[in-house]
Image (cartoon, rainbow, N blue to C red):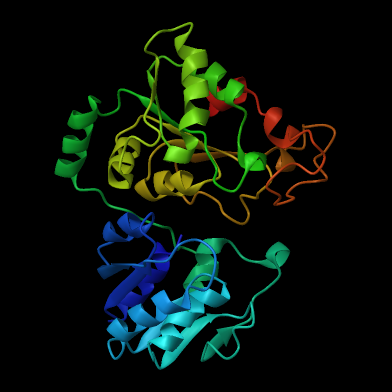
Length: 317
């Protein structure tokens, strides 16, 4: 979702270095606008001031401007410690003294779609046409598919995980039902943390149709996962990072929304079908509770996802 920002900055002549955590660094290496990617050696949680000061010394004097995309205090520390003179970001978490150019941070309910939210850091007006774009090297895709024993367009991909929590995940039994009804085999993608979730789906499907469902969660690099998605016939996913990868690659996809909102984080892809019961006038009783943006359903039913049927997804594939 930050790729359109990269495109804007590069188009006006800025040379871009991106500081990213190791799990997301491969995304930026696929962006031709990015000249350099620095993997940040920070663990989740805590300020880790010693590590930040050490890296800041290495970066001192190299940069004129820092665009700080995350809203956290710690994300704004490194540019300050590195002495970068212009530091642009949104207000939040006591960052007034850390940023030199501060944008007002609207409440989440009033925040624009995240692509526009990030693109605004460039200082340019929203064009309304910013869409994330990723380009894969065809040779690298072929190499990845050959290593995994896959053929272009001969499988569908499911990404059943969502790091945020279960209130964003379509039930595993629904994924399994959908897989059983598809003509093509299904490849399951996700992180190592989602391996068991994907195994549950694969076991349900393969018990009736041996070999129909293949679990690659935690078995591929991020670059390989991108190749698998880019060469698939269709991607079915929750509102997740891999959903946005599919959108940026322009693949046919069905995106399932529950506790979150496609008004906030839509898949910006003309080939995407979005299923969200909140805006379905025929769904009764209405989902007055959505979007709640909670990790787990506060009401305990998660009907925003449970009531999306495999039939409905199939009709949109």
